[in-house]
Image 1 (tube, rainbow, N blue to C red):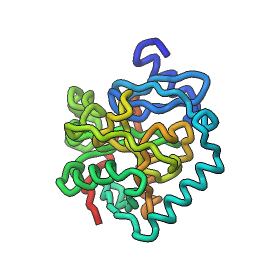
Image 2 (image 1 turned 90 degrees about the vertical axis):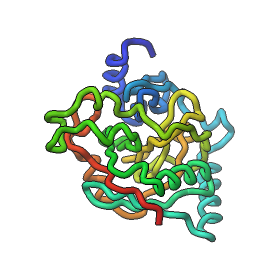
Image 3 (image 1 turned 90 degrees about the horizontal axis):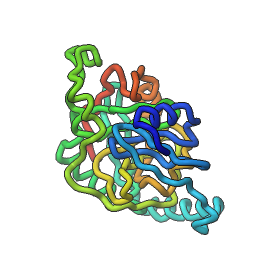
Image 4 (image 1 turned 45 degrees about the vertical axis):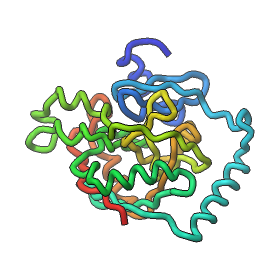
Length: 249
């Protein structure tokens, strides 16, 4: 794409969300749709080409059929679940261990260890995603819980952290739609860690390029409240949107 990071971020902001937008950390960005790829922010990005279902030999009907079969199979035993208690209320998710077992196992293991507790959603893009899971986002806000009096050096680190290991990609046929839980990553498909995002709409440009591993089952209103939070340059919430606890059920 070229240009400085600020120019690339600006370009992404002026592009319709379905075409290209950033997700993640200094090494994460979303898969743009044609005709070009854009770098997207949180401190760095990954450029990925658009998904061409014909090229990979999977038509829309086939993808739906595969997804339906996966769900039917998993429904027999039931999905594991977890809750995310936020400063706006509680959300509950089912975890798709049938299509992304490594991601689900890693996420639930970190949750049991309290890894996510006291964190925050450090990036919010209305109509696109809310993103969290970076341990660096546990600190940085000012005494009032806003960016007033914030520690700028610590804020600059938001979006750069992880658990110290990576999870191999498990791209699958589950689509990115409202409430779907997916994992942020860098240019390397196998670079997922702890940073995750929750979709705020249908995002087909991300399908099969980021690992979907769960979906919201309760708390739509909470997700919408977080998505409506005021943000500043860089899609950073002005007021802390806290992740108080993450608990496997």
